[in-house]
Image (cartoon, rainbow, N blue to C red; front, top):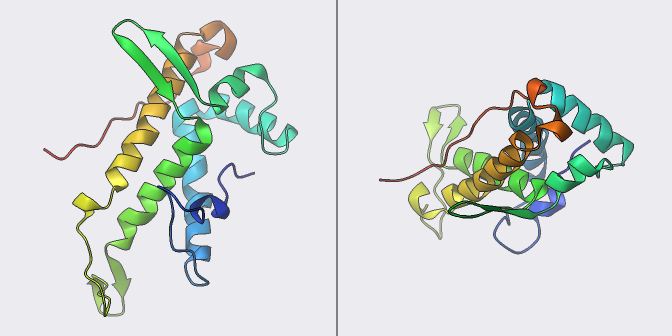
Length: 172
């Protein structure tokens, strides 16, 4: 059961992608591939299995209070400031957007790796594509969700938690 839908990338805004008849199946493949991967990395396998079971039970929306809390947007007052999660869906959309746009800069053809060139446009470099900003926004939510899980171990069974840490991407 996917949290992210193809229609999430068709709405005007920061995650808008071209989703014509040739692009839609490719975007859907990215959703299918990366949503589960990022969730398993976020939760670890055991907690992911519990989350997925709850997601299926709720027909695409979690029902258990512990999962509802981290599924929706929330903030935490922490020494030195506030950390904030845009919510799990927004996090996943940002990561999938990053993976898709990253792979658009080069394409494999019968002659090897090529850079697509349009007749009336010039490709922008990845530095200006905002894909890193979308990744980092997702990463901030990812880190906030993991922080919440780690410091509420009686709710999430921290002993069984094995999620992977994720770092921000920087150009220096």
